[in-house]
Image 1 (cartoon, chains in turn brown, cyan):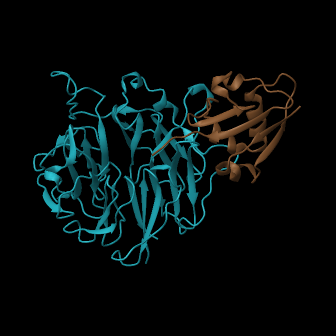
Image 2 (cartoon, chains in turn blue, green; image 1 turned 135 degrees about the horizontal axis):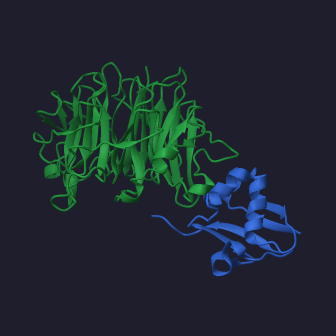
Image 3 (tube, helix red, strand yellow; image 1 turned 45 degrees about the horizontal axis):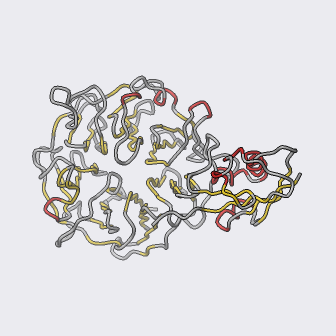
Length: 94
Length: 359
């Protein structure tokens, strides 16, 4: 199945300028699989989103079909054939 | 001749250039809104290389290189320049220091969390020093207010096997076997925050900065969290040299790049009152290895920005510039060995580090 990932403006330089990336997953995939597939295509974007332990950076929010993943199953949030994953920086800083 | 001054701030990097160190052209922020805790200017090859640690609150840290004085920046693409191996269960937060030893193309980085990294490709990729990361003392190291970081690396100028590193808190550690083993090297340094009777531990001191004498390799100056010291035996033992200073608290200490026994210090009132002494920004200079110090006003008006551990540097020119950055975003320079100072730039974000060179 193909899952769409929406890339925020600040990270498009790490995704060959693309605003939307489609990644192929097997059935039963979860958000972690989406990010792994994205990392294969664009290695540098992954370290903007996750640290070496594979944990999502604190001020990166990832929405799966409109729900922030930390309110769902985190990186184990299921994704389906029509799912849309959106990466957004959270509101932080001063 | 062009002088390059790199200013790392809480909200990005600023590059200042000058032909006379009187008039400066200052860039717009680079890596805007990222914390720039460490900058290195590697002048060992004919093409200078800038190294910058920039950590974005949103998108994490990385190390960037420029071989054209900051016009273009490069970052290794397929893997992070500094990344903890999977078995460490740690993640890189930022680099606090870049240092250049006597071996061509070798660059060292100190990071948060506590780690020393070695690069053999002039700062493009790094390998973790395992003996220090797995040191038996590590459970005793504590996170200082700035974070659990190796913030100071002092290579030996001629012996690539020897080096000092320092951290807050944990102390000074030394190696004489290229980093295969590390020994706590804090004899004589006080840990004033420990109970009486326990104030001179083997390790656990809160070191703020260490700087090696440019002419006598075994002579090293140290600003502690309470205490200013000099070692004449490469860090094996330390002696108090704070007697001529108005206070023994501060963050920065810098050896003169061409004169033995000359060093600079920017005292802070005290640990619980972190302002310049008497509300006046002064840099003190010793010309006798710390036996005596003279105070030199940087600015003759009330001032409340202190000088952080890496915000005192020199360009190591024949007539050296001594640069002073402050937490309220000002940078000053002296070209008369610290007798007088003038402003390079003001109103920047919080200055975390400065590095300068002739390029």
